[in-house]
Image (cartoon, rainbow, N blue to C red):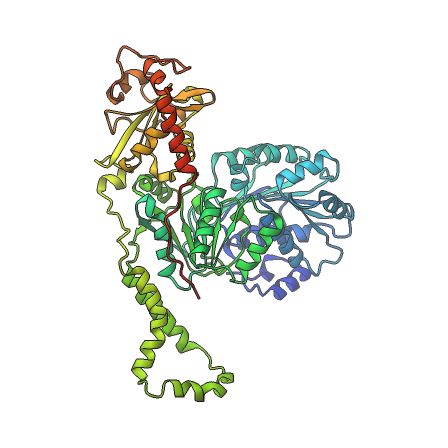
Length: 612
């Protein structure tokens, strides 16, 4: 491996590198820096999170710009506020000996007037989020018509967050002869289209294989029932006493709920999501970096700015809708040459998605079991013993030894040790001694095809479909939200043209039928009934029918009990006789009672436990 001196960097940058403690360039830096320094070219670089991409484009940009000019020459676009600030701070650190350098961060959640003032003072490099950057361009608060270098950092994530139009508008207002450097962890089609539109014969470098996860991370999955997901999370935390982790959830609501539950149960946890103010996010990240928070629960978007090298575990509490997102998640650990573990908590319905991720990242997931209670007790006991063994003696305690010795004068060494460790051991033993086994056995059919039907499933007919704007994922989220079920409690969703089918476990049947007794969606009554065929049909992903439009004929075998075969069409106003009966006063009473119960329901109480 070459040194930074070999890459052709000037003395000012080398001095900054020495101060930062960098010794040797990473693979992406070794490949990208010579190209960007010696050639005026566009570049596409694929490398995982944590491989040093900021320095790979940062050093060449700093060396090429004219610090004596007040013209904006470099523009770096990044997906989130946190990542924007992180890049700006790193660029300032790299160029600390470049006299006259002014790097300005532009992002939402902060005063646009103050940011415009900083730019006006003469910013050679602007680091920005696409939304705020477009806003400032529209207000004519920034001029990027003379930039020479543009960088799209985490390009896949920016497009995944819906910034395609903003990026297109921003780059359209820049010179055609500029150099564009695109850095990304994955290369979906949307990123390739951006590269084709705004880049001319770009050089390409890849660290590892496309979309492949870093070799420093091991990948594990734990198979549990959906209702046991949170209990599984707690056991994984207890089985790893020194865990320093990021826990990923799909939504802001789930992120906040999981963090609150962990705090309530005595864990040092915090939440990071888009509903927090910038000040709140800064506080949470400061606590995480200083390890006041041991478990950070985050959404995918909020986690883009996490730059912490010592994360031991990434826990996928819920898998993302986008398969490629897993690459970004697992990249939070195993950074800076260290090893890490990526854990995935899944139910049977998610096995198929896990297989898709394996193909994308070119890695195999190892099936592991959630530890039982006694295994956790042993781990915690030995962890405490090792900490005590390695603790340095504080001799300020000497003046109290006489009283302490008097207290234990008749206690043997063995009894003293037992008493001491029982303080911690008893707490875990009492909590876990009757704990159930959370592991679920996956059959070969489950591993290949996802969740299979069984006698504990109920299949339902619902009179909404593609015409109502639903595909399988939207319908699943809709049902989860209104019924207050877990995402994995609704499965085998099959969306047709004007009706659909879905499954839940039988324990939810009474609640679901009661809820839809007299329920309206957008002014229309929604009818849900138990279907005769519990397993008929697969998902119709993206709202596409797979049988050439014969959904009604195919749906005959999957027809709910009591449905008249002669009645092929349903009145949108819900005017059939059965629905009229459901709008009776008796039905309304049941519906109101159901809603009252859901509003005042209580959660299952958990034993509160303190943690060191």
